[in-house]
Picture 1 (tube, helix red, strand yellow):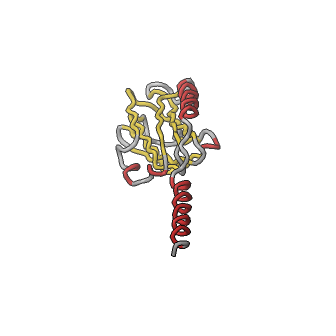
Picture 2 (spheres, helix red, strand yellow; picture 1 turned 90 degrees about the horizontal axis):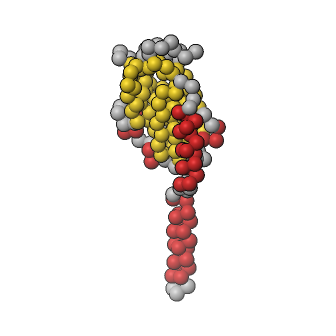
Picture 3 (cartoon, helix red, strand yellow; picture 1 turned 135 degrees about the vertical axis):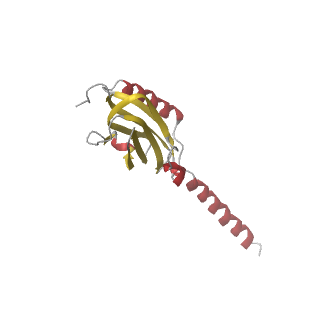
Length: 167
């Protein structure tokens, strides 16, 4: 009986240690994230025809029905109507991020969900130029979830509705 208890305790301790190692994904170094964000923001702001940028943190826990509910994401209300030609999605981390986009005009709404972005592959462009949505008044960016903890950004490109659309 004496030998069983210490052996059982050792097995339980080893199991708890291994479970603790795999339970949480690694948290990205904050300095690396800040460097990525510092580079992403001016790059997006200086891009030709950049209209707006949104960014945020993500992780596997973001995957739920509330994440895709209307009004649950980051909402960009344009000061004046714009023609959205595309939205460039990018992320920082080692996995993938899934982003849903919704563009709203005065009369229509167009949703493009499940844009899976691989952080290792760089920019992912979602093209709206062929849509007949008309001048947009709002863009909603929903972080639907990610394979690991990471960060994302979305930059809308286009022109003011009073100007000729970018070609």
